[in-house]
Every structure is written in structure tokens, then in C-alpha cells.
Length: 55
Image (cartoon, rainbow, N blue to C red; front, top):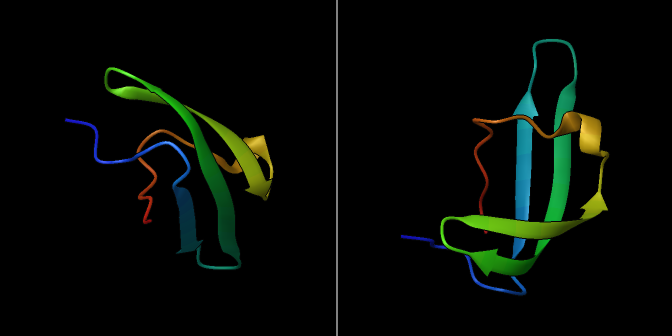
């Protein structure tokens, strides 16, 4: 079950030991259990499978 909705703003922020990893996304569309997004802050290189996202 997908818990995100189109238009949601999602944030990941994690202390890595030496710095803070942070990015924000906006959900553009949802298909099944996957979603398309636009990066609002941060870069695509920061996004990793297993990251915890909050609305």
C-alpha cells in the first residue's frame, strides 16, 4: 500500500558521522508501489535505496 500522495513533500535527513545528508522531494505521480518525484533540495546522488522519508 502506497502511503504517499501526489503533491506530498518528502524529506530525508541523516547524520552520517561527519556531515548531514539532506534532501527534499515532491511526489509527482504514483504507479502501484512506486512514485515519480521532483527534487526540491539536494541532488540525485544523495538518494539511496533504503533511505527513510517523512512527509
